[in-house]
Length: 42
Image (cartoon, rainbow, N blue to C red):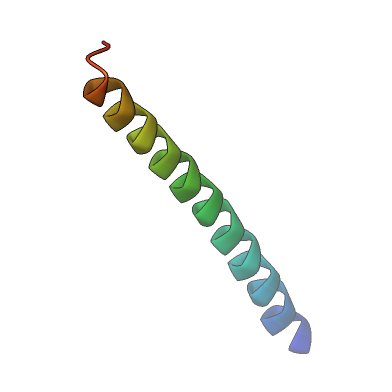
């Protein structure tokens, strides 16, 4: 039964990594968009 906890832990860790990657990309996109608006670019 220990393998169920192990599998859930691995899936949770992978999900956490994927979510952090998506979050980081979104932050970069928001900063780039704000910088373009600041420079008057569209």
